[in-house]
Image (tube, rainbow, N blue to C red):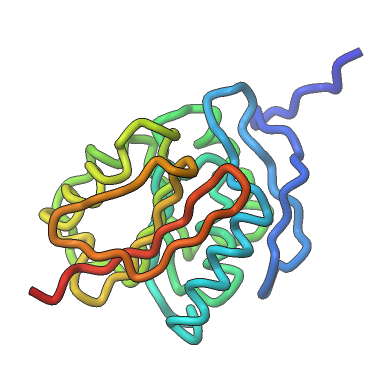
Length: 196
């Protein structure tokens, strides 16, 4: 017998917030096979990479693109980010993101957009942290980073994280890889705009 579906169209997953204000709180994953949630281990590695370079996420403005469950953005908010933009084009993902935000009572610090990360218009200001977890082997991450930089979402101070499939590789004109780690089947990159 199948478990009953929630009204929000999401199911409680094995994912939890790793650290910060909401440490240990469970996250709902989108129903269906359209999204591939970032594992807790991969998320923990990514945030260790970020904190070792930034010291703290306190007060930063972030974006979680190809957001899925919103786990990356909610982890950032839990660790002190002031605001996060969540973007995903999948309806089930948007329902899960909204439910997770409501469960953390983080509505005032969140902006949810049901659209493609490639459809964002010009930014009012560059963000401090942009996190991308696009479908593996799609090349969408590099395309999005290039476009977001041209639209002003990414500036010289912005840290960009990108998750790809292991050995997929990444190259974005005008960006350099500041760090990379392999975690199981995933490859994590931290990128910054090149100085020249």
